[in-house]
Length: 234
Image 1 (tube, rainbow, N blue to C red):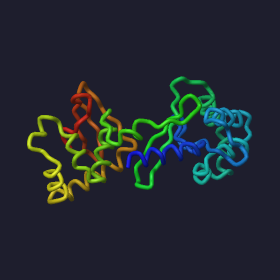
Image 2: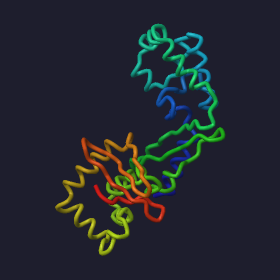
Image 3: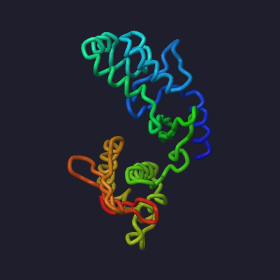
Image 4: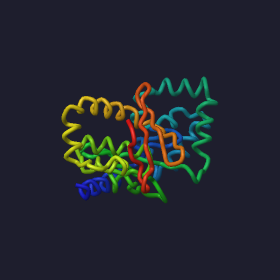
């Protein structure tokens, strides 16, 4: 399964151009017809140049198809005309070199798993999510892994998320019996809430403990143990 996912990721990565998530301007720049750039940085520079020159049509052609659907040309042109300082300010930020700028993409496999790519040194590379689908490297990643394992009914993996002092007597079979039995409605509600929150979730970390809020007033408490973030309390 993992090998197939990696092969699929490599194939998709080779054809992926600028359908990317850019840290400073998510889902903004696209590979427009007749305006293909060799790399994302070139697309950003050309978009920024068109905005600074007040060339709305040229700038608009650098937007992704999704961005164009959400912002018709007449709206974009009016924004550039009425509030040029907003777009020009963003263009200046995009055009300034930064060693910390990180460009990422997400590829969804046929099985529904989301695998990450990062653009480094002029090429796309698979990030850790393509190798370790159940990483516990940080609190939010650990919760995403927990949700992925729950959805896949990987109870052997879910046991890993329990701290050592809660693991005595715990087994995949016990978890399955509980979470597919009387606790299932409660777990489904929890996982649904986490699904909604995790794309924008942030962790508050104090020492070896972390809190990740979700829903209206709920939070998950996590514990760093042996280099892995584990779930202490929902």
